[in-house]
Length: 483
Image (tube, rainbow, N blue to C red; front, side, top):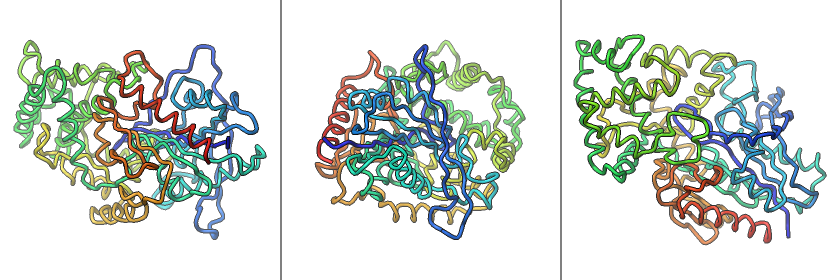
């Protein structure tokens, strides 16, 4: 049996950066210590001589010299080494196949700082192309350090953004990547991702409350939109939704509605994923949300929405809703590594959406219950106000990304990529949900959300999720046996 080195590209969530939520470390387990690898600043221009240190973690407890290696590629957030010690899909497969696991942090996120700061002159070195080339160069270093040979093949796993990265790694670097598990990977870049909220609507419609849930959300948002039409209604919105600083512009009003939409979008995206250990507000399920919005004892639909916002503020340890567009822009213009928007990865990820992907989750569809205030301009104005990138430039960048990687048109001569997606996850719209060929299968998991197969198993897992994990593991075994 040939050994495989398996990449897992870690990240799940958009447009503001929310890294794939790490599992809890088992009691008494020691987290791996970080190592550092020197990378060139620009993988494609040898005239740029600067270098930087990329952080990575290793767990070799299951590995022998002839065994496979799973390399987890980080996404748009700090690399979390608990993935290397918990019962995640990766670690369970590492145990099954005797694999080493390595977690490689994505450039410009966490503590992997290629430049002195993220100013406009420096952040230009942040791209998916550079990140993939980082991984390819890192491969060569690992081969040398562990004295590997051609028997040690490489496969990629990934979730969400890095699910797309994993597919692209297999396509662009077939000589070193023998297979890829591209979980919830949005391989199609899309400027105006209005379909996202359409899936949110359809996912809420299949809860215990049925169509009534979306009807109540629509009623609440319709009343709120009327309140926000001019500044006469803003003080009332401030009071009901604990807005501080007070609304000062329609840009602020759009931010407020966007914040409220995020409550529903986040719960839908991670519905019933095994993330409750974090004690986050999104331990709510879609049933919980809809039961809340259909509870007449909480007042009118708008009053229910206000109460829901208050509950999520409390669960998040906050007292007020910040809907200031000015604060948003000023925060993301800050570029030092210690600045909050940089530490969280928000500035870097927004830059990538403006220069590569779009992925902007607008209300530019009438097949969703959230009104029409959060339009495309709401997102692309941030690109311009923070990075001086126009909407037409974003559109061209999205076109360039799809031209370079191919979007959903994966070449049929490519093999050994599997595309798991959840039916409730809005990101499945931009992924592969039907088999392309027998060697490019899709696993569409009914009733599950974003990256569900990557999390630790739970007794409440749906049968489709359980069978998907079995199928993915079997494919890994096939690649190990045939590569």
